[in-house]
Each structure stands twice: as C-alpha cells, then as structure tokens.
Image (tube, rainbow, N blue to C red; front, side, top):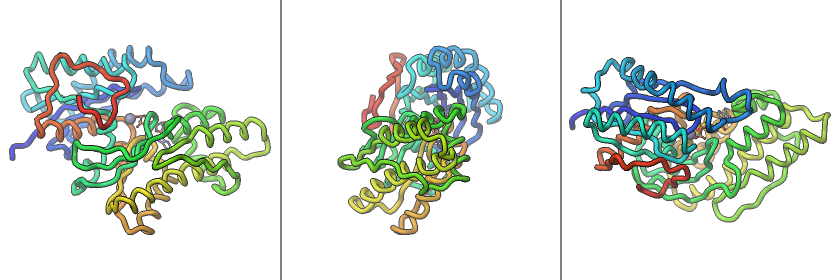
Length: 334
Ligand code: KG4
Ligand code: ZN
C-alpha cells in the first residue's frame, strides 16, 4: 500500500500544535506551542486569550511541522484537524485554518475527535497495538472507559458523572497554591507523601461510571480546615483514592468483557502513581497494559494525525461546512 502522510492540527485548549505522521504511526514532526505560562497567572485557561494566542501561533507552528518533517505541501496527502470537544473559539482557529489549507491546496480534510486522538497516542508508542482493547481516557476534560472495537468504532462503557479527573487534580492543586496545570505538581508532591495517611470518602457510583467531586471537595475542606496536614500526604491520599476508583471499574470491565489489553490515554495518564498501579493490575489479571510516552499523553497534534489516518483510510472526509463542536461525543460520527 502507498504511504499516507497526514498533517495534523490541534487547537482545542491551550496548546497550538501541528505534526506530520506517516501511516498513522511514524511521527516525522510534532510541534507544540504551549500557552501554559500565559494562563498560569489566571490559575486556569482563559478561553478568549487561548483563541487569540492560537491565531498568533498557528501559521508558524504548521510551517515548522512541515520543515521539521523535511517535507513540502506536495508530500502531504491530507489535513486532519480536531473539531471537538474543546473550547469553541480555540477549536475554530484550527478548523478555520485547516479548511483554508484544504481549499487552497486542494487536499482532503479529515475531522478528528480530540478524545479519539488521545486514544491514538497509544498506536504511535506501540507499533503493534491493534483493536480490540479497553481504553481508560483520563484527561483535563474527560474520564471515559471505552471499548475500542475498531480504530474508529467506540463504545463508552462508563464515564464521570461530575468532574473530569484532570479537573479534580487541577482544583486540588489550586487550593494548595500549586501552579496551573496542577496535575504534574500533585504527582511530584505525592511521591514524598503517605497514600494511606488520610482517609477520604468512598464514593459509590452505579455501573462503570465515575465520580470525583466528593473526593475533591473532601481534600479541599481538609486543606482548608486542618493546618497540621502535610500537603505531601494529602496529595498522595488523593491520588490513592481516585486511582482506586479507576482501578475498581477497569477491573470489573476487564472481567465482564474479557479484555486482554488495556490502554490509558490523556494528560492524567502521565501520572506516575496511576501508571504504577495499572502495571500492578496488569500483572494481577494477566492483561497487557499500555500507556503513551509522556509527551503523547498531553495535547499534541501527532495523535490527531494518527487518528486522522485511520479515519482517512476508511474514507472519512470533511468539507468546507465543517464546524467546531465543543461538546462532541466520542461515539458520534459527524
Ligand atoms: O489531555 P490533556 O492535555 O487535556 C485535555 O484534553 O483535557 O490533559 C490535561 C490534564 C490537566 O488536568 C493536567 O493537570 C493533567 O492532565 N496532568 C496530570 C499529569 N500531567 C498532566 N495529572 C496528574 N498527573 C500528571 N503527571
Ligand atoms: Zn486533551
């Protein structure tokens, strides 16, 4: 089969990213312009600022992705862009840019779901990983337990009923006066704490769904009311508590559906404690555990180009009516 080279564009939140990926798995370039230092002083992403910064950065980021891949436009077979979920103004910058490129260069356009992109991060890291498998998508905006039936076919088995897990990490970090995004800082502090030091509420949720807001609120209240608690212990106990919830549902899903492979995806899958506990789970249940390399866990465009490739070879094409869909669902095709 002829090689297919895709340019991916990602602007759903606070990273302006472009990447060139061959045949869905081989990364030729992966350029990320992060706005973190701009949003840091506000304690979270300011949507209006995010859109403006994407507009300033996008041309440079796309050019740089081509340059680093040592390619010209003639070498690109299609343009893949994130069209949701995410911040509408931020998404529109990428979607508008990709539509203009597709029109001007007469190249096919492929619309990519951001969550599908996170899942595809695993295909880049593990060249032999193929569906079917179970994927736990844990990011700043999503917490989904997904059956990956095929490259573009998904069944959601469970999801959060309230906060996304990354949101809970960031909120807990914020009340402890750790800088945005707090997840990585909680991860570091927790390494020096005792995960069993503080008892947090055990939350019961129906089916394979999750809930993080009760645990988050308990941590916030303890941090506020009990000045003698060490932040390290609170971070470690918080991680222990949310990880137990992730493991509990994943375990049920593995047993119920007889999965042989499980993958983690999304920014929170960079967490070292969660990774450690899922490796242990893999050993316990004799299933293979995958997680993307660290730079492919958080937002990037290589994962979008990879997911774009699998949609492209199935014939998915978007046209110039493509719009951003801020609350796009994983199991909905456009
Ligand atoms: O996937 P992502 O870049 O964006 C969304 O699609 O939401 O995820 C960002 C989230 C943030 O909440 C960030 O705090 C969290 O991932 N995160 C982490 C770690 N690294 C990033 N959370 C816990 N531990 C980490 N090491
Ligand atoms: Zn993301």
